Length: 362
Image (cartoon, rainbow, N blue to C red; front, side):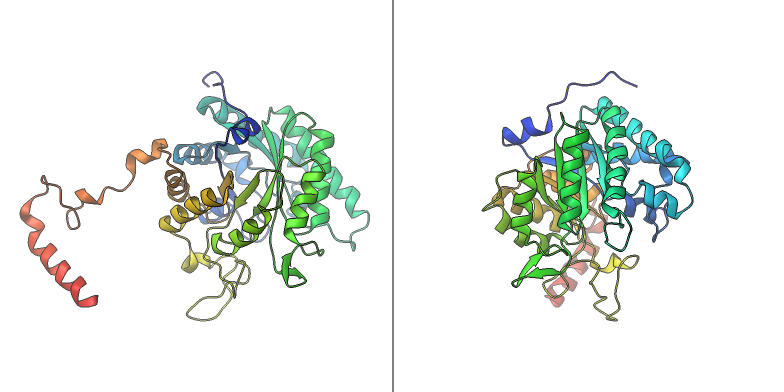
């Protein structure tokens, strides 16, 4: 492994007005590739195929991510017990963190530890807050020991659990920043979107900042179209940098999150394994990148449904040219669509027929 490259810190970048890109979405990536089970969504691939996890870290950096987010999402005590692998808890976390640190060191990027929603923040679970606190504590401490540059706590649909995550970060990772993001489901207070425990989002984000969060915002649940309106309101009152990390699906006002999205042909619910027909495309990501710049959101990423070509489109919308931009489409050299002088005349008849077809359609 190459020696560690000097890397500018998260908060220093944000204070300097820079935009930080954090590619996410590992659960869906590895489920699509056949290395993770939809349902339990436990990242067993970290233990069984660590070489693929390393490759995915590197692929997202190649596409433009400024951050290697350790794949410890759902690698917590409750989830590991669900599949009977609680004995592997420490090993899975330490391996994901170690590989992330190695890739970040080699590429000059930031490395972030990751804690997530626990699924047990409910009052029907005895001593649930103490159990959640312990889950956060051990994962944060492993991340700090691995040299994380900051901690990401994410996908909290209840304000209470997000607040606990902030408090845990301040307690067990005192000297490094924390990014804490809420998942906007379909809760409402006074006609406005709110957490499931009844806190309107602008207020919730402001209260997380007051508790010590360095960056706050939204992740998961909503696509760009239904996430940004909430953040456009929050940016007016929130005193900390905001984060926008949407899912890569075309959510709508009628179906604001991907769990409520329906197949436009059959009307059937699409979540979680049949979402392909509402997948965002590269232009969607380019437009999203332009819009977050206009709004003033400086921490951006892509969540469930992400892939390298979408991360590259986001990076390019911000004026970046990551290594993957070497292979950005150049349709001027396409045999049918291109106009490069070096193209042979062989395709000219086909081009004419194609143009005639288009003119009839339009």
